[in-house]
Image (cartoon, rainbow, N blue to C red; front, side, top):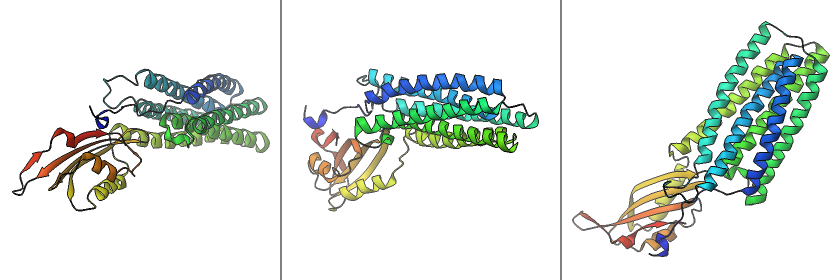
Length: 315
């Protein structure tokens, strides 16, 4: 078996630092969630209660993130996964988006109930808890952001699983800020109605973030090509010398940041697959490429070339 026929299907980044820090953030989030929900209920703050439930959704989502790291690592060499376990984290992100949307709807309903039936708020206690929550969120974001930079030497968004966790705590920090603003306005200016209003604003922020996450992850799960310019670049570089024509091209993501392609070529003078490989080597986002070369005869009939000219390449 030639070297070009030996390839790997491990298209996920094993990031032990990110996995450890994810577990730390999970426990921090769980502790803060319990504190905010209890205090929001006792002190009568809808913004604080909404932030607590929001942290609850993040606890669930971060748990999915941790499970995705574990499952991807444990099944990395499982041949039953045709293209590896790179999409496990993507599926987790999609699930998180659905849960976030449901909870955001519940937050809107509860906030409207508080607008119609205002409750007494103990501002000092609620402000203290909200401030602690903000600190916890910022510390969690720092942990996750540092994980991506340390292990990979590039931005954390290349790890879709880590990026989802990072965006969860950033969104949570934002709702903590909204809760603090609402509580300060209620304490010093008597604008108690801002508290449930900020609950609605926080819910809208969650919905927008959930929609973005669902859009990004569903595209990967459905094998949608988000970069038509990459497909055009493949065609352009392979057909540059005019000796062959791309008759079929399938391009998709096998995980976040990893692309696979199946390319069929027709040529009057077929070359070795290695030559075609060299033509697209500069396209560094391609990780798994299958090239099939077919010889076109003079009478327009085609016949398959020997197996050496149909090969799986890892670029």
